[in-house]
Image (cartoon, rainbow, N blue to C red; front, side):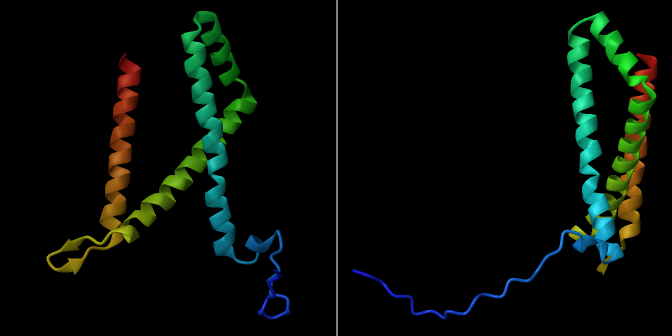
Length: 136
């Protein structure tokens, strides 16, 4: 038994998508930059994991890891990772108020207090961690 297609024999329209589509508008370029912040985050995660393993493997291994961290190229990559994390954090904090509506006395609260609150918590937690690290 054979089946016949009753559909059209025309080819479907397939819109061409060039590899550099994201370069056409500043919004897309910034979007790709923001999404690209994942790459330095992966670097830092792997670096942190390597540090934990070197710490577990004894003083010589830890000394080698610290020596690796002092390499100027590694320091530059870590600086780039820090800047990427700050960019990602900034855009995430700006997005959060859009995801939830906070009502105060029957009016929608603007995003500024929420964003300021996030940065405030980030700064306080960072300072607490630094104080603990310095005095332990």
